[in-house]
Each structure stands twice: as structure tokens, then as C-alpha cells.
Length: 101
Image (cartoon, rainbow, N blue to C red; front, side, top):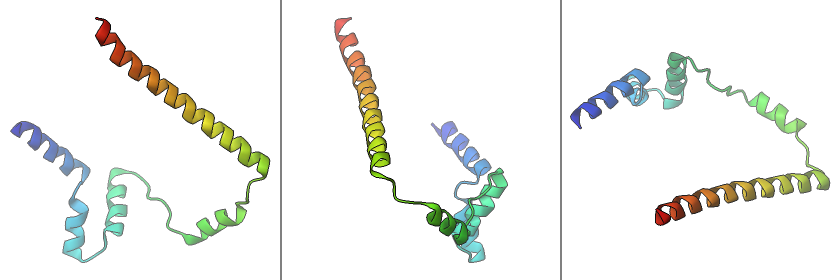
């Protein structure tokens, strides 16, 4: 058990988990800038925080027509139904097969 905990601590150290809070306390900065710094360390680009990009997308957005809305609803309901059926089939198989063995 102790070996697993030390292994987990090593992984946390490599990934930098918990490091941003310590940096923020030391430097007196907020954790948002530390998150950006930590993502840069890993090699992931942080999402843009430019408000103009969000405003541009909102200006391009429009209210869907009734037909578009109905089609989105039909597709969503069909997807939910299919995923539910797959889940039910898996549940039924996993509960009924052990009883028959």
C-alpha cells in the first residue's frame, strides 16, 4: 500500500498536480495564470481568453428554424433511446447470464 502511495506521489510530481496552488501562494498570483503556466509545461495550449472571439461567434449565431429544431430534437431523442437500449441489454446480459450458469 505504501508503494502505491509513493508511486502516486511521483506521478503527481511529474504532472505538476498541486503545484499551482503552492506557486500561487508563494508568488501571490491567481491560480488561473498558474494553470496556463502548468499547461504550457505539459505542452498543451491554453484556450484563448479574448472576449472578442466569443462576441464574434455570438454575432454569427442565429435562432434555428422550426424544422431545424424538430430535427435536432428527433436526433437527440433517437440517440438517447439507442444508448439506453444498449445499456439495458448489457445490464440484462450481465445479470441473467450469471444466474443461468
